[in-house]
Length: 129
Image (cartoon, rainbow, N blue to C red; front, side, top):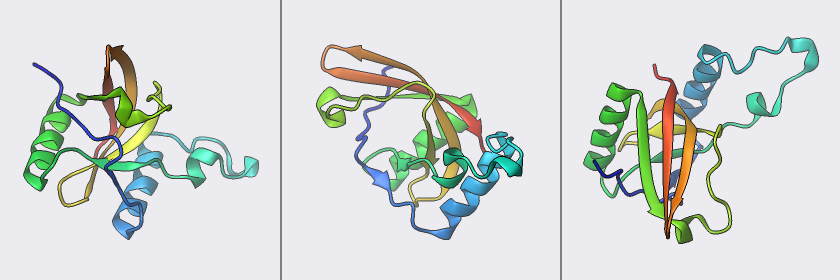
């Protein structure tokens, strides 16, 4: 099955409370804030990862999210031009949202393959509520 196309510039604005609450829960459940408090907050704790939704419609986004949550894995394909000079890197976290902008999963990039003028980005679910 061919990975779905994605526009990496189509980020959801991280400006509503639901995303902030999701990030607080996700970093706790994924054990991303394991450092004792006497070290002070880390960048990972202070700066939330980007949030994004897949597809050209809410229905397409919802179907993609359902598939990712069922498999706990996913991948997307985009043109290298869509990324500019910054290709995705393994280990990077982001928040996958549904078609309504509701956060559904914290995902981590596991593999990046450049195939000609296409970038295939694979990821796994780190946390889902």
